Length: 179
Image 1: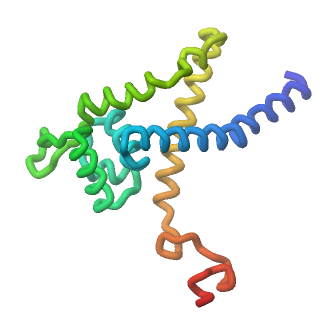
Image 2: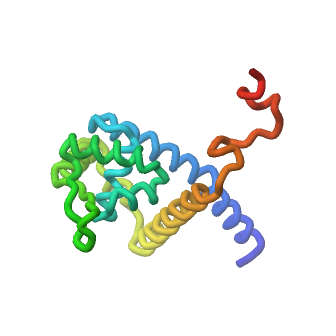
Image 3: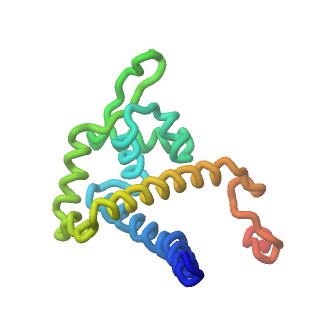
C-alpha cells in the first residue's frame, strides 16, 4: 500500500468512525423516538423492549444493569410495558424469588408492523453490495455495536465527582453556585 492509499484509507476511516458514525447514531436515535411515538411508548420503554427482544429472558435487575436505569425507573418501565401487554413476567426457572421478563408476541408484531409500514424497503439499502462487501458491513456493525455497549458500560461505571452531574471547572459556570 502506497503513501497515497494509506492517507486515503486513514481519511476514510476517520470519516467513518467520526462524523459519519455520529450522524448515523443521531439519525438512529431520532428514528427510534419516532418509532416509540408511533407505538405510544417513551423512547426508554422502547429500547428496554428491544433489549428484552434481543436478550430475553432477563430479570428486571439485569435490565437495570444493562441500561443504567435505577431499579425504580426499571420498575416503571416494566409496569408500563406490562400494562400495554407488550411484556410478561414469568417465574424464574431457578430462583422462586425472581421473575424473568419477556416481550409478548403482540410486542413483536406491533414493532414489526411499524417497520413494515415504512415506504422505503430496507432491501434497497443493501442493493448493489456483493457478498464480500455485505460481510464487511456486517462485521463493522457488529464491532461498532459491541463497542457502543462497552463504552456505555464504561461511562456508567466511571463515577462523576459531582454526584452524577457534569463537573464544572469553576463556580461562574455552575448555575447552582451563582444563586
